[in-house]
Image (cartoon, rainbow, N blue to C red):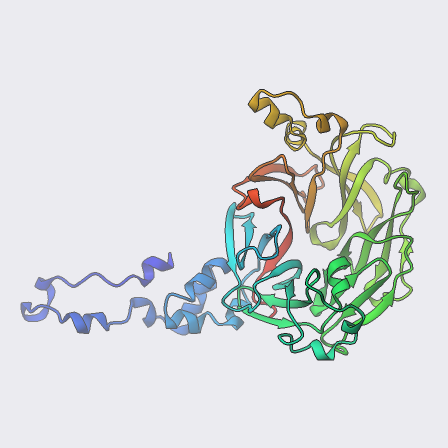
Length: 425
């Protein structure tokens, strides 16, 4: 462990000192620890064996570690995959909670030391970069005067002016993107792509921003039958569900658009062999599969095709983008699903079955990405259900995640964040 290497050496016994004299405490305190005598290459070799989380903490140990563990060196370390939770209230104490699946521990990520905005909400992420809606005003936002869309949607006390910011919470840096109107913040879905590309999708249009190009928001009209539901990025394209049914019954269809054809590139994704794959799920939601090569569709499994049919469990379907074939990736175990219906809580308290459990109107919040899916619900207190995709093609693994912080504040949502130093705003 680095902590043991950095600890000060044991005092030399008096019998071992020349002439038997006592050592000078002041001179001994000035002796550098043994790790300071390592050649730079050897020190780099030692520190590069740390995980990113430990390396960031070690930067605070000494000046040597802070100078050695530079952002350039930290960029060589593998990213740390986290589940980042979005607090039910934007002013959630100036920090965000994250779960490390590898260590099964919860982390607290502070933002107050580098982000000068008290109210913020995370919405999307790419490798090392996190995107937030932050509450600003025209006087505090340096880019507000450059906006061409602010005039169409003025801020009000009920809808304060918000800006989209990109930050690296581990490096402690941030940058505001060009100003958007408040309607985009209220109704838009943010997607973060490669190379700093950002998309904001609404029912009628999409905005795209790429730092390497014009550095301005580009508007693209959407030719979709309804507002895109749970859009995701996979295989250099945007995928989204659209409701093509009636006001009395939803009927979902999959649409996609290449990233290089955001204007006029939307088209339905359908195959005759798929049959009624979109009819078996209630309120389906898309998530990215592992490695960006698959699309996951998660929803409640209907017990029948009746309009008000209850759900028997949660089903995860998987679309292989190479073969364009669907398969069943996972099915929530019955005992786990009963906890979301309130049956487990009622049984433990000796109460009768909740009426909503019998009717099947049990909303389960679904979030995640890159082959990991988390489930939250009002009746599941202090924990999340987790499903992890199996690369071998089997049904995946289900588990509980306990110790969710602040669960009394409401139901959390979140997404996967690969934190690191590979990109700095």
